[in-house]
Image (cartoon, rainbow, N blue to C red; front, side, top):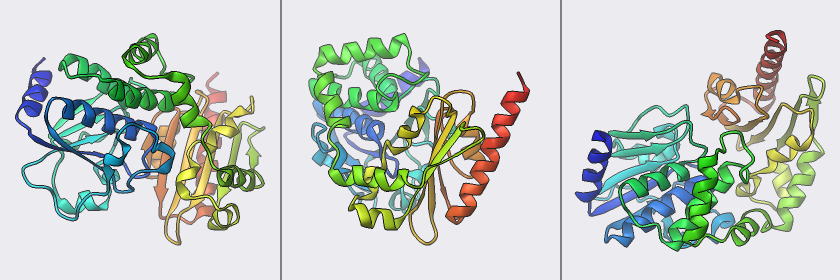
Length: 325
């Protein structure tokens, strides 16, 4: 209750609020920041929403998504700073880091969260930051309008894999039902998220699947993404979200990952697990983080070397899991 009282006081005493979410934002990052902003605006707060990468066209259907902008070079004066769905402060982007300011509030569900805020509202058992925010809005008696409900529903739906992942609980489905009653249309939002891709995105998937490989008796599946694939397909980097999930359709696959060369000095990897292997642990050993079933890495290692290290660690984890039985 003391933490809730402190948070209530923080919001009551804040007229100007700026919300941040992580670089390469996903549905939960956008959904949480937009929902929080719209709820706070409904009670008269001046709220801005910043993201280092701005708004992805994939989520432009979200209500009031035009409010998401790139952060200014200098911090806004007399403004409360809130970070959502972001495990470490560096993931808020280079502009925020240049401000050298600690966020007033850090709201998140990643188990790898480093508690970098002045106040930290973390629940690693929750499948999505949007679910945490819904419960918080109720506790603070802040409004959940139809637009807020739509944003929260998308955040929960995307981070639970359409309510398929293990952290999806009865509470998650009850909250989804409450959001539907508040104005979220599950059919329309599902179509906007999953049946709204460009042809270039499918062409990118085709190129990626041509590099698909299996390992460890088909328990590992992975493919590469290279600049050449983006050039051939015409796809943009923001259209890679969800590609790794296609590998999990194979029933033998315990761990899937996609590895991408961002530029000459940066490589990115996204990992997914069926449940036997903790990919957050593997990612953290290579400088990344995330969840037990979904994690990511940004690395300075060349793509072939990062791929080699991932295969080594995943193989070891699978062998250890088999040996423990």
